[in-house]
Image 1 (cartoon, rainbow, N blue to C red):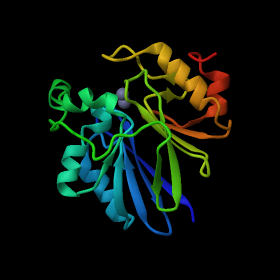
Image 2: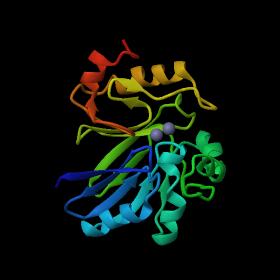
Image 3: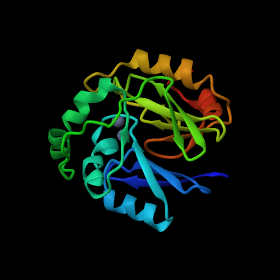
Image 4: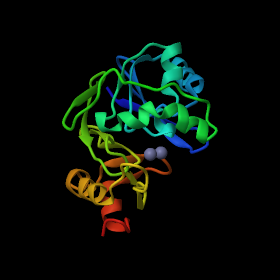
Length: 211
Ligand SMILES: [Zn+2]
Ligand SMILES: [Zn+2]
């Protein structure tokens, strides 16, 4: 049984919303539903999947701004981020309006996530790492068996997340990447919240923020 993945960039920020599914059970998860709920639900239908949950890396509008809309159409639990991002999720109405996005309702997840929590998509397990710095409640999702990290806005190909927003902290971000991500195997595939996939090995060599 394999884990399947389709990346669906959403919003004007081209945020990599991701549909993950187990190709035996057809259980599926959507990560970072930033917007375009209709389009994401169409992908779920097209592959004839059973959507089990939404996982959120953090509370920014391009990652969480479409959730309130989606769960009206399709009731499903929302897992994450860490509770330290609550203020971002409560601010979604103002933040989405300020950026000219469709206005989102405030959002309270079904369950906050903690470092070390385990989540599943069918038979596939992902471990949650809490890595503050871009936002205080940012989490990432790692599947060892699939050599796959869903990194949100923590780590990009040859870059890192901005830390100039309210609650950002550059030192925390660097420390979290070094201690929790650069200890993963070099061949781990990294899917960032924006832009191209990379690997842990590539970032150790080429990321100018982490030399
Ligand atoms: Zn962000
Ligand atoms: Zn983002």
